[in-house]
Image (spheres, rainbow, N blue to C red):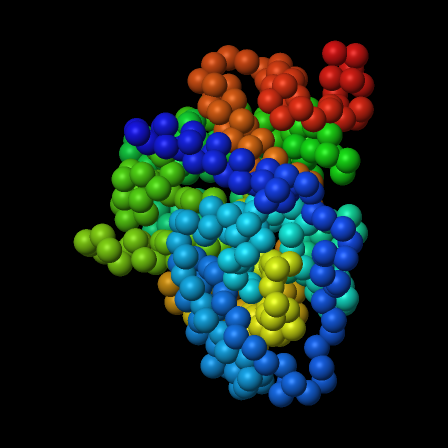
Length: 458
């Protein structure tokens, strides 16, 4: 089985498992109300009355981060034993299998933020509303919304990926670029043309792979208040906001300032060390990749800085989000209070969130954590900048994306379509109108009455 066939098979398997999880192991739905557990009760005031053994599933540094929290957590809840299992790439498949079977799930599981809505829609997660609703105002609305279903809370945001632009200070000085003067994407493009011209074409302003435009489109779309779907789940991509987003992307592609290199490919990663790429507009978590990669390549490390994400228009929002994850408690869990005690400590306390950022660069979704003095510490790697504070600016203003159960599938179609658009000559209006119809055919959702195809009579 080649790689492409395997990816197709894996997507089909996951879709089948998700369907099985929704209808139940015998194809007869969720069962009666009596078979569904009641919402989680508040914790006792005495932590010594909370006990149990809980298993937590996570991956990579996220699992390591939770594991490192256990001693501090046990200082408050001494009778809760926590076993963190780093499940890696198989977590999603294993978790869906356990949901469909009704047994075998952990007490707590990590999910990617983009996947949370489809898992929550299975109605196989514990209703956290009685214990979690009080925290709603302490998280960015853009994250909290994707943790709710039918007005109830089923997940808690963990980390997030606010965006900015990482840049090489030496290159900006060499070519006379002032990062403080870059306020819009048009300013960014103009600065990029200077860099390309003065470097004799050796240095490009940013990487932008025509075969992988989905991430940058999502960043720009959310920054601009655009949507793939409206609040009713109808297709809403053909809008003024998405037209403006596509216009910025088109100007970036046609300006000659971008390097057409694949994200995470050799040229992309090598560009972190050399002079071929001057900036990387990315999420906060990419800073760790820069530090690690610069250490791996031989030679002198570039001196890095950060400036705010350019706005789409003067005075516009200068941040967005890419990435993030949540924690959930499967409904089959028999140690719900112990599981919630751990989630609450890890995600809803300043101490738990700041510790994870200090140790593993997991940027807090919990807004009170951003008040910690640690976020105002100068970062030597970034030339003494208060980089953490820069990333924290305006995160509560990031617009909410209406993520549906088929969000990830829609993003896959978007990336495929954007690749064809970037290598053709289709204008933005024609592209968005066609993509809207493609989504309608592929995922079966209705088109929003606010779509420009309706309001313009198209």
